[in-house]
Length: 165
Figure (cartoon, rainbow, N blue to C red):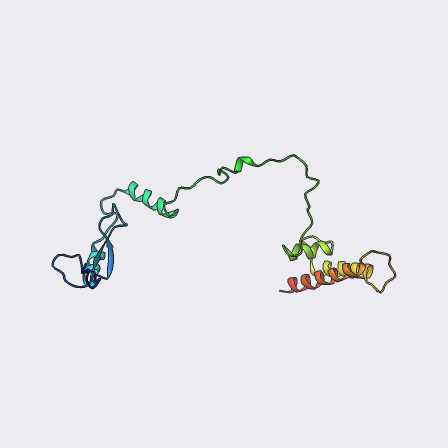
């Protein structure tokens, strides 16, 4: 390397060209590089064979290491915090309500009191029945009927669009 001008020269014997390209010095230490010019890096790449002196079993081991980016793997749930989980056996406080934001399809089916196997005709029938029951113009004594009616209309609109696709 020419330290005055900060120019790297080619590491090839008797070459004075500028070394712009990195190439590993050996396959045992791939993180230490030498600098080569374009002509010599092409020559280096043509002759480079990482697996040249390896047997079939050694190549297979190298390929397996490459599939995990040479990181060790552990079985699922083998982390330190896996065994720290505790459960008191009480399911009563766990909410099973479907959230509109988490899954709109399931929320819509729940609002129309349908299952995932419902057809478009089932959706229409359920909508008509619930719309009559919760419509704000009917004389009903159901609390929050206007909000429930809006949810039913939203669910019906979503499901009819979903099933028409």
